[in-house]
Amino acid sequence: MGAVRTVLRTKVGIVGGGPAGLMLSHLLAGAGIENIVVEKRDHETIRTTQRAGILEHGSVRMLTEGGVSNRVLSEGHRHDGIDLRFGGESHRIDFQDLVGESVWLYPQNEVFADLSAARERDGGDVRYAVSGTEIVDLESNTPKIRFTDAAGNDCEIHCELLVGADGSQGICRRSIPAGIRSEKFIEYPFAWFGILTQAPASAPELIYANSDRGFALISQRNDSIQRMYFQADPSENPDDWSEERIWEELQLRVDGPDGFELKQGPIFEKTLLKFRSYVCEPMRYGNLFLAGDAGHTVPPTGAKGLNLALADVRVLFEAIDSYYSTKSADLLDGYSDRALARVWRAQNFSYWMTSMLHTRPDASEFERRRTLGELEGVVASRHGSAYLAEAYTGWPAGA
Ligand SMILES: Cc1cc2nc3c(=O)[nH]c(=O)nc-3n(C[C@H](O)[C@H](O)[C@H](O)COP(=O)(O)OP(=O)(O)OC[C@H]3O[C@@H](n4cnc5c(N)ncnc54)[C@H](O)[C@@H]3O)c2cc1C
Image (cartoon, rainbow, N blue to C red; front, side, top):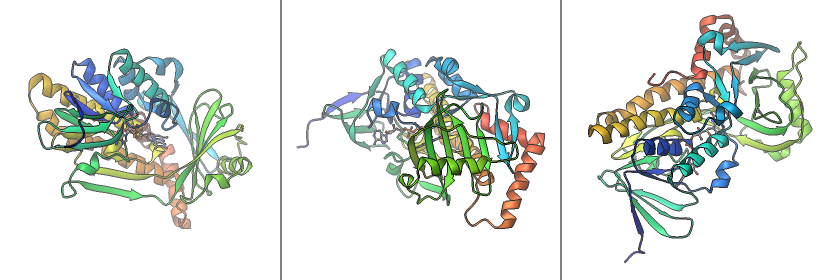
């Protein structure tokens, strides 16, 4: 006989307590649909891990109007545009003027802090620091999540619907049989070398810089901490880079006749972020539904990853809510197609921003000049700029 497991019963079992898992849990609880989240990392690790930082207006509304927290409005920073910088000159894409929308600079770990506090405030059942997660019986009416909790107890959740919100390295999508799961992806021949520095902001909004030496992103975190990235070879070892060398490289990528200078400070985190474009289709198998990075990842250039995860959740919540309130499975059946429509739009935008702003290591002189022509076309055309502004700030829900 196997070890005795504690059996827990709920309607929706959720694997992963990132933004997708916790936001879904919050929305379901608000609609009276009981759910349990299991998360393998501990609370402190997630709260202190730096990842995404830009929220679309629709994501902000999910946090504020959805009753999570208004902290994004009081502590985040509204950005009404970005700078595209190339040929040593900055060109502002004015979101408000072009599409009447904005984005908010608000780090992902603050989103997590708000969501986890809201789950705690509302009596949510979120189990952190679990291990050995397995999912079984996905085709049945009682799919199950097995795990060992933080205290070492073996547990099994019997649920009606199971949501895989376990990120890009998770187990859930791999549970879809190979003959049904179709994985589409591309790799990029570059990575992002990222730093966090204790320094004042170099600019009020994000700067996306294209240069002969490659791409750089000058971003912010708050008044005293800044986030910057530069395109690097995926094999680089961040430990080989001194602070002096990093600042020199970053400055070279934004140099121009306007004399723009980065505000430097001590660097306290160096990372190498490898990325790819990836989609798993379909995002549903039996009673398993994928949401967020579990189903797709995008390169970070378009700031879409976190926002796309929340957009999936909006669609999935509507489907689950409709299922329990009307007993009709129509929206559940349509979930994968509906979510994937936005995913592929965001894939295209993220791919476009990435290829337009980066310099491929093997780029010919023709390719280099063509890319500059593309950037010039975007900033010179109100329609081109408006496409960028609309996609960056976020398409309307359902689009
Ligand atoms: C280093 C890094 C930097 C990034 N920077 C940016 C950026 O600048 N801009 C941007 O838009 N996006 C960025 N992203 C992407 C963005 O962070 C993700 O799109 C976003 O976190 C997706 O949310 P999610 O809830 O779907 O997945 P996640 O946030 O990955 O959450 C999934 C959760 O599931 C948990 N989990 C995994 N496996 C199991 C298991 N077996 N059992 C239980 N729990 C499990 C994980 O611990 C994790 O907490 C970055 C990602 C990384 C990794």
